[in-house]
Amino acid sequence: MANIKAIDLMELKKVLNKRGLEERLSSLLDHETMHQFENAVATTWLPIETYTKIICAAAPLVFPGAANAVHELGRLLTPQTLNFVYKVFIRIPKVSFLAKRSAFIWRSYYQKGNAEAIDATETSITLVVKNFPELSKTMRHSIAGSVQGIIELTDAINVKVLLDERNPDAWGFKISWE
Image (cartoon, rainbow, N blue to C red; front, side, top):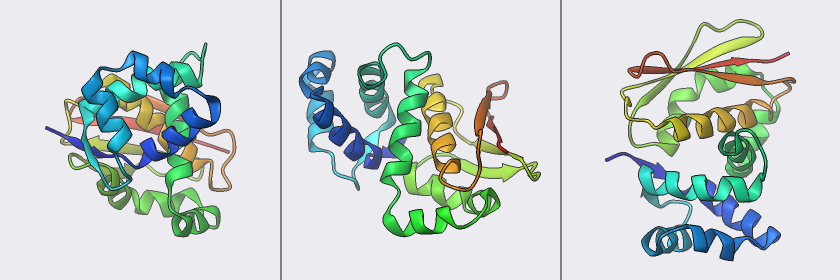
């Protein structure tokens, strides 16, 4: 079973609280999932299935009517949860700095799979996630949003992340920017 760090859920708790959506989320989740969500701290490793249930329920609450609410939720949460030191480093360098750190960043969030950056140009790069064929479509969309949000912390503008889902042995996230 694969696990994911619950750090993004700490920001989700803040967002739900600020918007008064905690009870609505609770009504959408089973008791055990809600219990895990309420008791998770930033360093908690949650089963990816539990995390997926939480973001699938929360995304349309936070982004009602959005075409890809899970993507938008990832885009909102991940940049907010990067610790202060990392944010300082991300605002200064280019996307190439993040590319070099992609494997480290991946291991900070996921206990399974490996990430590497390939095919880098001045305005694009591909993030490839290997050894994680069971990574769900929902999680791939959440990751795409997270990647977009992180890249937007640099000086990049008009960031786009397209999924290449043809190869489950190497999920692709094609990132472009101006």
